[in-house]
Length: 211
Image (cartoon, rainbow, N blue to C red; front, side, top):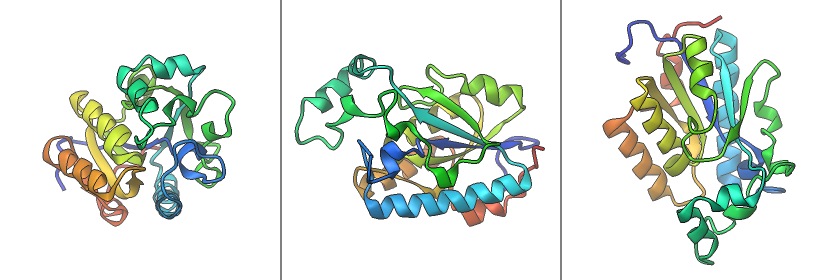
């Protein structure tokens, strides 16, 4: 498969695979329990395979010092003020010290890299993600996590305009919104930003080992 790079060197960018979305016991902005179970299992399968072939895992974790860092976003403020909004709990999401800021234990290996300064949908904003990837010669990103139609879509867009080859692992992403939002986001990505592929398809790409 032609990914548009001469020598692909890949990393997984796991977006918000934390308890704040995926652990029903503590999640402040949860996906459904069924979706959480499915996403966790799919991510574990992909990540275990990637570790085995030397593809690094970089976890991006949303963490805010206080609610004002969230409230500074005008649209998010309106979500908080709208009781019918899916994301109405946004001002109470993943504040520093909350259990939701913890990566799901089954998905975290001590050898993984962690960037825990994410504060907006785009994983590159306000983090050292781009610096870390380029320092290690990464030119191909495999995106996983939550939510397909916000953080995954925004990060796919941002990675594309930074000239990374972008793959979205379709079985490893989902949303707290509707299936239609999930499908629409994947369609946008496929049309303009990268390749939505299943884990089986990713395993068949022959991506270069990075060890």
